[in-house]
Image (cartoon, rainbow, N blue to C red; front, side):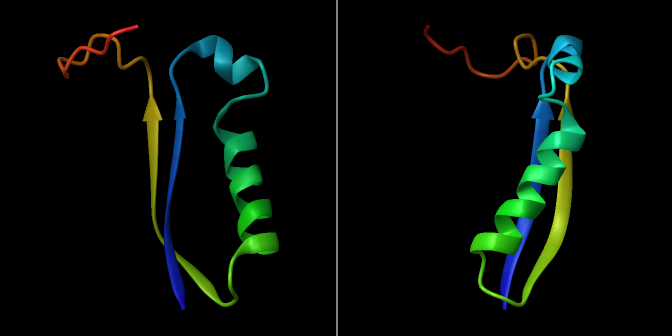
Length: 63
């Protein structure tokens, strides 16, 4: 049995309103797993990240 951890993220409130929010991501992940994963599979964890990572104190990224 394959095991998965689901991670969804939005960095701005606008993303949630644009159709890129958490619910559509969850839906798309479910569709992907149903179509392409070996059956049976198990989701062993779910994580959601809300808000920008721009000021989280992590390492800077070059753009």
